[in-house]
Length: 531
Image 1: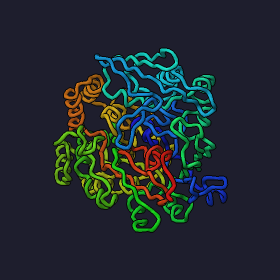
Image 2 (image 1 turned 90 degrees about the vertical axis):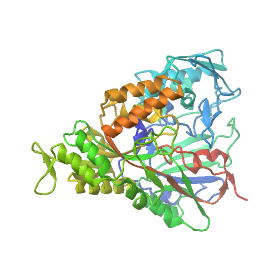
Image 3 (image 1 turned 120 degrees about the horizontal axis):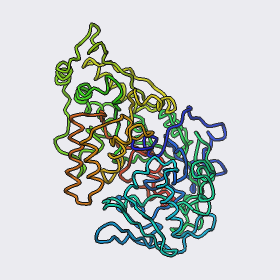
Image 4 (image 1 turned 30 degrees about the horizontal axis):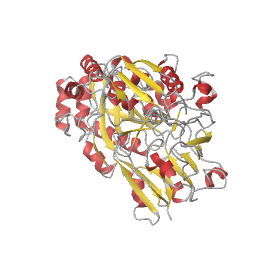
């Protein structure tokens, strides 16, 4: 949910119900090769990006297909060189990162890649005129400069521990993107990159189509055509997979279960940082009340959600950091305690009314909760949350809508949101909880305002001492127990069902941005047809 990641980490669900025309339905990939072809793949995903420009946030966490970053993540989420020839040289004070660039790389239009493209990309992202909601992720950058054509030097304002992980940011070509409006120019929908695939078409609300880059520096992919079919509705995605329109798809656990044991298909389960949470807007008289927030935090039965909604494919969430992570703060787990929730509300003056709904100073303990139309997981989480809340005397009305409907209401209405980014805790928590970012699009959707959290977030971001950072993020997680501006519900494993046609499929630890940059097709350029 950080920044635009609520739209799938820089991705957003579209407004309309997504269906294909007759030709696309039989062959979403278009052209002669469709699902099942040896050299093509058509996969079903739930979200599409706002833009295909990395200058506006596309692919900022890697795996963008059209582009490469200086570095990339391997299957174990370790950094490896991409456009950089090797991992960066870091100065003793950790304020200077020097990257030597790979030689002989070209953009797909044949223009040579060089250091000036790297400098252009980072300076453009940092420009306040650029509509990039994740700009603060590069706050540590003081300057970026080229030294010749094959060396780039970053100078930081402070030692930012995860900086190298930020340099998976895709690099845009200055000779194209630098000659047009960065926010509205044609590059936003028809980009050129150095990546393993070349965009062949983007029909918004339908599909994104790619062809293999024959001159890719890493070798031409064996999968020559790759199509992401954008199918917002979970049930429709499953139906299309069963009908043979798709070679693979991301599915919620209950639908993925229907494909178990089918010959010719394999299910891949990826562990994730992906959470579902309820935003509790500070500006709502009920949801912004600390007692109501604390009561909801223990009235909710997280384990029941894992068992019944996720069929065990996940675990309870108590914050953005999953249990089991080295950054999780032991002791911040919240047990299901309905009696304790009622006691908190009673002591705070929220007394049951004649209809069972609590009232305080003439205000009923009631508010709406929005979830995304067609998203079965969010719907099921929202209904379960409202049911648990009702038992405590809080009346939550669930409503379905598109982001176009939901976004204007976020300041006052609760939202069943999603988010999560693997790796460093700064990646998720800063955009999610920093009070300065309240009201900044999908950043800090709840308008959470806690000075102790703001201070800890800055400490965690500006130190490269592990112990100092761990103490800072412990403070954040403990403060979320005292005043939870969000009710975190579950961390969700991602399930993908794919035709067993290729070798080389693996999964990474995934962010909320599921299906678009993740999934077993995160490395589709490395797949080979089975013999």
